[in-house]
Length: 623
Image (cartoon, rainbow, N blue to C red; front, side, top):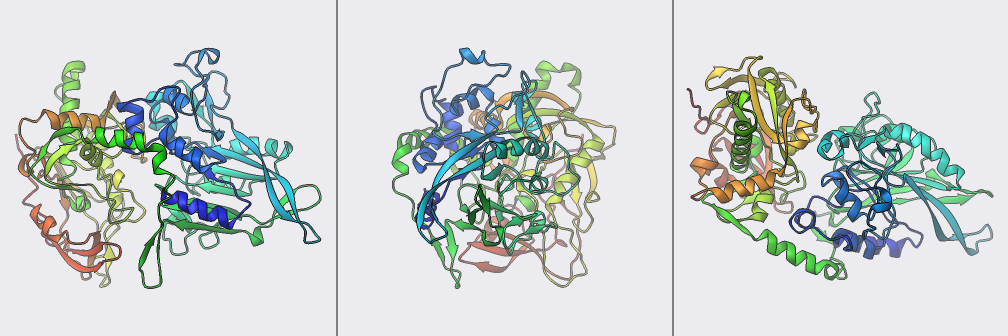
C-alpha cells in the first residue's frame, strides 16, 4: 500500500511512465499461502496480489523463481495461462481461468513437449507519450516498448518435484541473443529486460543463477530491472560484492553501460529509471548521458536521521479486505503453547530457541518415513538442520520472535518462513563436514590481532543459508579465525569423531536438497525422500501433537555448536535489536555486552567475547 503511494507520486512527476514488476509476486506471505494451500482460489477468481496490481495498473510483469513453488497447474490457473506441459490436459481442454490484466513474460523456461516458452517470451507495447518537437511544440508520439523476461535457470533444481520432466530452462544470455534482434526487427524502439536475478561475473554458464552481468553485454538492451538477491541498486554506499564488479557503477546505476535498477524486496522501494529519448528520424533512441537511475524507499531518513514513512494509499486495502480478513482468521488457528520466547535475535551466535523445535519436528517426520519406507536404512542416524530464516537482513523487525504463550499458525509461519517441503538426504560424514563449512560462510574471518572493531556476520551471506543442528548427539566448533573451508573443528557424533565414510540421513527442505544455496554435494542426487508436505505444516502438526507446553529445557536448549575460543585485541561486533541483552543472558548468551545503540533503527551493536564461550548449553549424549 505504501509502494502504491510511491507509484502514484512518480506518475504525477513523470507523465510518460510505465510500471513493471520483477516477479515473486504470488508466494512469500500468509495471504499467498492461504490462497494457494489452505483455501485454494477457484478458476474464476483473481489472486489477491493481482487484484492490487490490476488496480495499480501495471503494464507488464516478469516471472520470478518463487512463482513455481506451488507447481505448474496452480501457476497456469492464477496467471490465466494454458501450459502445454505433461501433467496438464491438452491445451484445448484447459479452462480459461482468471489472471492479471497485464501481460506476463518469460523467455527462458520452455516446455519439454514442444520446446516453446511457457509464457510469452516478450511483448511489444505501444506507449503514447508527450514529446517536444524540434520547434519546441508539445506533440503526441507512440513509442514501441519491448519487454522481455528471465528467471533463474536453477528453478529446475529448486522446484524439481514440480518441474522435472515437464519444463527446461535456457541460459539468459543465449535467450536474449535469440529474441532481442527479433524484437528490434518487429519495431521495438527500446528494450527493457526484466530479469529476476543478480550480478555474477564468474565464467558464464547457461545454468548461472545471477547471470545479469552477461545479460547486460547483449546488444540491444536499453534498461534492466534486476532482483532476486534483495538489494538496492544503485546505492553509492553499498559494500555488496556484486556491485563492486568491473563495469558496475553503483552510483549512476549502470551495468556495463546499461541503466539498471534493483528495488530491494517486499515493496520497500520503487525503482525508477528515467530514460531520455530522442527521435532520430526513423526511430527512438536512448540518450544514456541523460538517463537517471534511482530507488525510492517507503521510509527515508533526513540529515538528522529522523525517519519519515510514506502514507499508505487508502484505495488499496479495500480491494482485498475480504481475503485479508480471511487470512487473519486462518492464521489465528491454535496449535499449542510455549513457556519460553522463541527468537532468532541471537541464532547466529548459537541460540537454538527458534530452530530446535523445527529440527525436532523434521527429525520425527523423517524418522517415521525411514521406519515405514526404508527399513534397510533403519540403522542410520536421522539428524535435522534448519536455519534462522529471518535474521535481521531487513532491519530491526526482520527477525523471528514468538513470545511465550499460546501458539497459532502465524507463529509457525514465523518460525518457518518459506513454503518449502520436507526432504530427506543420505550423506556421508565428509558431506556433513562440507555442509557445515558452507554454512560457516555466514561469518567474516576474524583477525585476533586487530585492535579495530570487526563485524562477525558476513553481510553478503543470508541467514536462510546458515544451516545448524540442534541435537545432543552431534557437536562441532566453528573457528571464525580460519578462512572459508577450514572452520569446522571437532565434529563428533555421540562423542566420537565423525568419519568421512560414516552415513547419515538428514532432514532438510527441497530447496537445500536440490542445490539451493550451492552447498557442495547437494544437487538432488542424495535425496532419498521428497515429501509434498510443507515444512511449516509438519512443524504445526508436531507442536499440536505435544501433550504439554513447549519448554526451554525440552524444545529450546539443545545446542550442537559453539565458536572456538580465541582472545581478540579488538571488539568483535554483532548487530541485533536493542534491549535484548537480558533475553540473550536468559538463554545462555552470556558473552555479550552492549557497545552502542541507535534508537532510530532500533538496533544495537553488541560485543561478542569469543574468549568466553558458554558451553553449559552444549550437551552431548554418549551411547
